[in-house]
Every structure is written in structure tokens, then in C-alpha cells.
Amino acid sequence: MTPDKPSGKTSFFRYNIAALLATAGDFLTLIFLTELVGLWYLASTSLGAIVGAIIAFTLGRNWAFVSKEETKTRQAIKYGIVALGSMGLNTLGVFFFTEVIEIQYVISKSITAGIVALGYNYPLSKYYTFK
Image 1 (cartoon, rainbow, N blue to C red):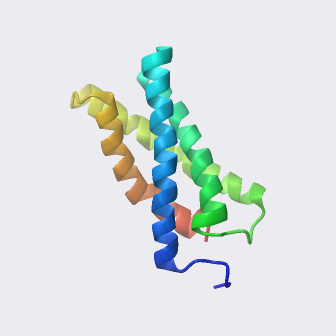
Image 2 (image 1 turned 90 degrees about the horizontal axis):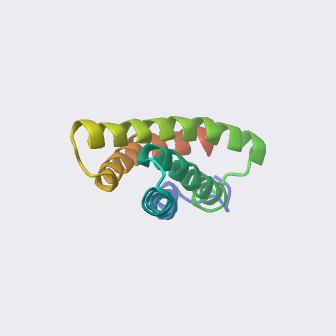
Image 3 (image 1 turned 135 degrees about the vertical axis):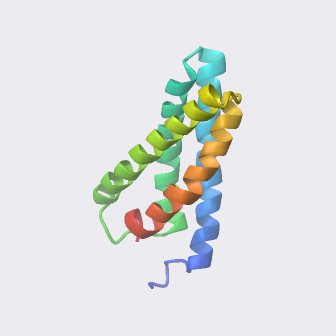
């Protein structure tokens, strides 16, 4: 571990702060596009995921994991692959909870975001994108 690279506990703590900021960007985009612009909530979900992914990548690379051994382009490609999977899981989860379980879309997004963040995003960020 290089001196600039945070410990496992520190990177986990920082990852969660970065994830909260990325989630805020994601949710604000979702609500803004759905409620104020009138975009379909699933399209807003996908666009919010893109905004959140940009925030999460930037903070993950430069602060949470301090991972600069690989080129930014290579990491961005790896992150893009993970983010596409995350966007798909988030969109499917929001659809499922909203249409099948009949929960309001913001609550559906909250439930889905928590599941995807801990079960998919963090492990792949730590062990694949920013290893």
C-alpha cells in the first residue's frame, strides 16, 4: 500500500461519503426530471444514474480509493461497465418496486439504491475498478 492510498477502513468510510454525494446527485436529477420536466420516471432513473456515476467515479478515483495506478481512460472504461450494470439494476429495481409492489417511485429508488450500492457497486469498485 502506498502512503497516499487510504487503509481499508478509511477507503470504506470515504466510499460511503462519496456514495452519499453521488446518490444525492442521482436523486436530485431523478426528482427534477420527473417532477419539474415531466420525464417518465424510468428515463429519469437512468439519467440520474449517469449523473451519480460521474460523481462516484471522480470521488472514487481521486479520494475514496486514491487509485491512479491505471490510466484514467482505462479506469473510466472499467467503471463504465460497472455503471451500466448498476444503472440496469437500479432501473429494474425501481420498475419492480413501483409497478409490481406499487410503492412510490422515490421510495422504490431508495430501496433499490441501498441494495445495489452495498451488494454490487462497492464490491466492484473496490476489487475491480479501483483495486
